[in-house]
Image (cartoon, rainbow, N blue to C red; front, side):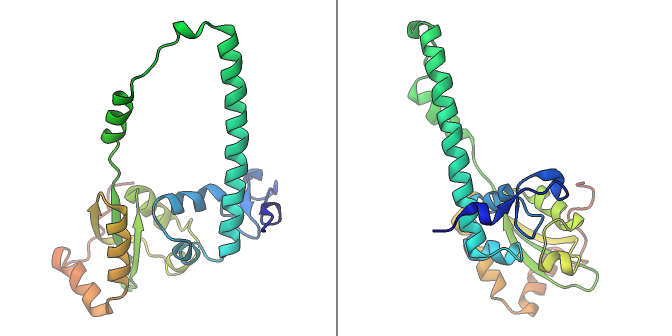
Length: 199
């Protein structure tokens, strides 16, 4: 079993002492966010080089321990609240309200293509397009995109289904370069940066 302490470290000289994957400046929360957005573990290793599958497992173990600590803290807090206050005075929320609240929280997912002046292409998927484009423009995500400075958003598609988004991304990645170019130029013939003015 992987000991997360060997792979997630704190260094006061790196990222202001925040926990990072050893040997990188990548936070565990970044990896967890990528997994939560629907990326597979293999896709995360490609997106965040030089992250490995063992680093991802260590990150999940680290997150589980933090969640356990938070749960214990919450339980202690709830116990104190119950002993200090009569339960009959506490307001209860019906199950219908919870269901309706969840129904309103519709997630959006985006399949996108980034490029540069040389028209190198990168296909990705995310649940927050503006944030991801910002990361590409700032070069904060190590790997292919940062290496080739892919800072122009050439194409994007939107869906509410995370499985559909992941499948579409894989589908486009399997296309020839010519077919990807045809997709871009079908709606963006001049290769404008579609994110111009966002940030």
